[in-house]
Length: 295
Image 1 (cartoon, helix red, strand yellow):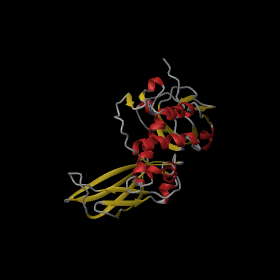
Image 2 (cartoon, helix red, strand yellow; image 1 turned 90 degrees about the vertical axis):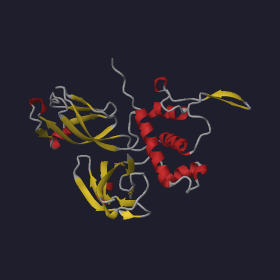
Image 3 (spheres, rainbow, N blue to C red; image 1 turned 180 degrees about the vertical axis):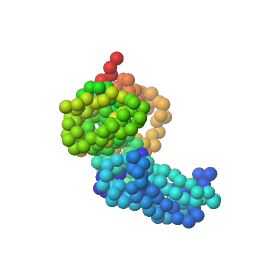
Image 4 (tube, rainbow, N blue to C red; image 1 turned 45 degrees about the vertical axis):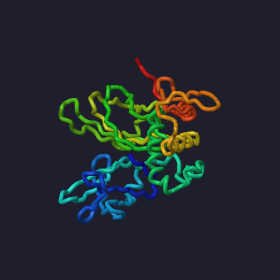
């Protein structure tokens, strides 16, 4: 998933490749269609040709100004066969660090030909995913649509913590087998939902969440409003680790040098080392929102 910051310009790049994985020029133009998380079409356009087989598409304001996940579908004809390819992107409240900041903090990345901006963006996205998966919280605001089950209580446990806003709630009459919309919350009903942000719980103050299986769809936002500086530094450490080759074999547990032998910290989530980097793991422990295990 490629991440773009809210209200900032962004360009999606796609390369047409033949069956051998080699960049190839398609016949005619390359179309672009953008769908939101509900599969509603929200934008169309044409890819801009660059090097052989490489096409770019500048995200329109309607996408850049709305948090959420999107599918950018490129359509083209190659060797007489019409084809499509999807690129998954997400517009988030912010990015964990800027490319210029990473280059400034790590001069070894100043070679823009060896360490391209595209490579750094990829490393940043991967570092963000690693951090958020281990910490079980988003370190920048994100928007998601989740389907959950009600249990006839006032509390509804959501998959994410640090919930900041509820945009919409739809109840389905799934229990009767009709699978039809039973209620789309209006403003008053939305206001009736209290957010226990830290626990990731939505509480109704005057009604119950109806019993059913996957009968409630909630559109909400979650995550840190601003990224703590230690998290930014941890993300940069992980990005550098991915970008700069390490001479030490990835499976090594120890190394011998002219000054002696020493062991290497390796990832072990059960031992409190989700990444194996002591500084990064300390940040995850400090800023994470891991829920307690029950049972």
